[in-house]
Image 1 (cartoon, rainbow, N blue to C red):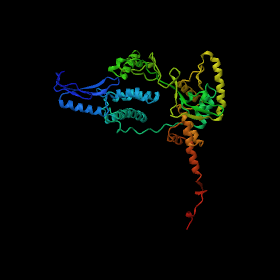
Image 2: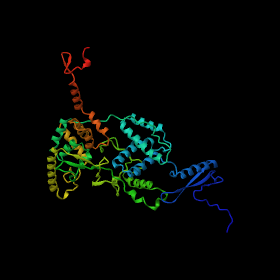
Image 3: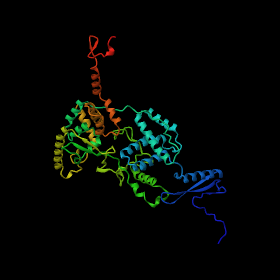
Image 4: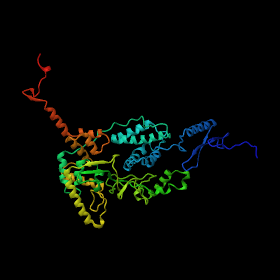
Length: 481
């Protein structure tokens, strides 16, 4: 047996070189635990001086002992942080796909061009502040700028909580004050005119239901016959119809492969999606005379593009979506609890007539009919595309001789008319499904009719006759002493 001293380090013991390597650097190796795949996580440190190496080793050992081990290598950039936040963190928390798609759009158009290349530990509050000011100067709405600030701040708050970064640069940057909410409502006469014009059109009762209950577009198009009682008028509004964006499925094939021992699943997935998308990428801008696009021509794709998922051979829809037709799916409504709404009794005969007409459509379509139990459908039973529904709204307004209004104005109209008719604020809140009664209270200030009625009632106090006020009675304190 050899009597030489034992030189092997125990676990958790760090190794530090006693002399510099041929390149002139002192080296060290620190055991930080194990990686996600079970392999040892050893960090290599090299510095110009031995004191610098020892200082870094102590920092890493403190992080390891405190259970706050950051990923190896340089801290990620803002773009890398947000890509993971959108692809893994938010879906894992059940955030709605449309919400994530909206966040991704704002990241692509506003956050990545301004701060995407900066390391997360180097982004300064002044840089965030300058970027928000630049967006306001470019004419963006205050609500848009506030949402960009909120997206960036929430991702940073997650990194701070996990110990990956020391501070949130958005924490002490005040976003612009919110805009005045745009609550444009139709009058009661205009609502009656719309209902009268629409009732003779296909799915015409859809507009009466929307005006009476204030359902959102997706909630109205997602109504199903099995959720409505035509005897009592009660309907369960549990789902909404949405058009979602397809997601790549090609990245799922490489997620669990052993080849990823030196790489994580997120990077492997992004590489697979990029390889799938690159064939469809736009490499040159459109010519000035381009007439192919109804809106502004899209810019060329970035070098690391992972869009075009609709062409992916393994394309899929976000988790939790009940596919109806292609990318049109039924998803739970926006509210966390399920909503029940009662229809006016006057609408029930119209709904029965609509059900009979749909039955005749089913017979006429024969084998082309697709049964989805939808209240409002196309001639073959498929769901009504939200874009086609919006086009029908525009046509109805034109036929009624009314100016253009957003489709969401129906919801504003229903809330305003309910309050004009003296329905309690709490009942209006439950009908619309608002999470906070302060949102419902905004509609009490939107109606000119309510304010005119208030002025008329206050006018009853004053009745001027020959320059004197009559109709009021003086109290003892007003009498001459």
